[in-house]
Image (cartoon, rainbow, N blue to C red; front, side, top):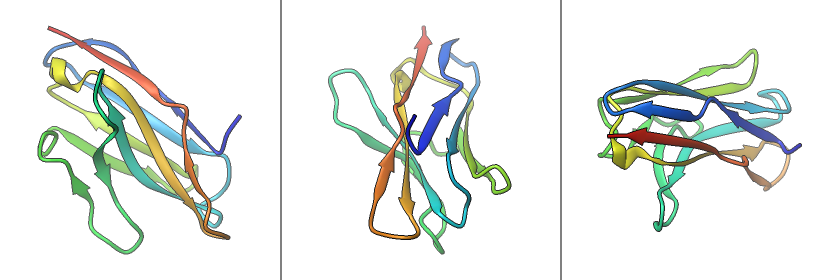
Length: 117
């Protein structure tokens, strides 16, 4: 098992909601979870939402007003609440984190989100 584990993906109808999670294996003093990226079929990985340390959250234009990230620092877990989902949100969603001890960066294994029309 890696440093990050995503969960909560699944199949949902267009207009529906889903919340996915990214849990770090170590505490907030060791790993900082930056945010979420996704890879749609046949496309490159793209940013969904990110909150770099000390900075405001940035959302992709395509998800603004529909997706929201939040954190539970006690669990060192980040969530992505996705509302009003559309078929073009279908993708594998990945979270990314940085080590606070060295220059290592981590990716989770990804969680599949499928939105049916």
